[in-house]
Image (cartoon, rainbow, N blue to C red):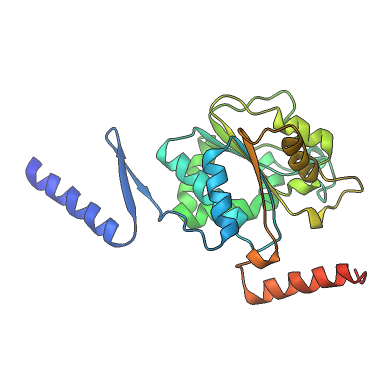
Length: 249
C-alpha cells in the first residue's frame, strides 16, 4: 500500500510539473510554487537581480513597467517557501485624509483598498484562500506608515508602495525599521509626487548613492520605454511626458 501511495504522489507531482507548476518539498510539507517570474524587459531584469541581492531596493519607474508584479510575485514566493516569516505592506496616507486613524473600520478595512495593486498579485498567484489564510495568521500585515516609528521588522519583507509620496524624514524613519534577516522594497514614480516638498524616494536614491551604500542597497530606475502593460498605457505616458517637456502640463 505504501508503494502505491508513493507512486500516486509521484504521479501527482509529475502532473503538476507538466502544467507548468513547480513543486518543492520542505521537511514533510509539499510546497507548490507558481511559475518563476521571467523578466520581460531590461528594467525588470535589473529589478529582479536587485531584490534578490540587496537588503533594500528603491524603485522609480512609471506605471505599467511591471515593478509591482515583479516584486510582489517574488516576495510571495519567498513566503510560500518559508524563506521569510512575514510580508509587511504599507504606503503613505497622502490622498487618504492624511491620518488613517480618522477613517472608520479596522486597519484592513481602512487600508486594504489602497494596497489593492499589491494584494491583487498575491491573489492571482496563489488564490484568495491563500491570501486570507496568511492574513489571518498575520503572515501578511498592513502597517500604516504613521504606526511604523518604534517598530523593528525581523525576518520579513517590507514593501512600501507610492513611496514618492513620503518626505525625507518619513523615508529616513522607514529605512531605519529594517531588522535582522529582512529586506525592504520601496516602489514609486517620482513624476507622480503629490507632496508640496521634495520626494522621499528621490532623497533616498541620492542618499544611498552619496554615502556609497550600494553594497547593501540599490536603486532601479525605469523609463516609459520599459512599459509593458499595454500599447495604450505606453502611448499615454509618453504623451504626458511630451506635454510636460513642452510646458503644457
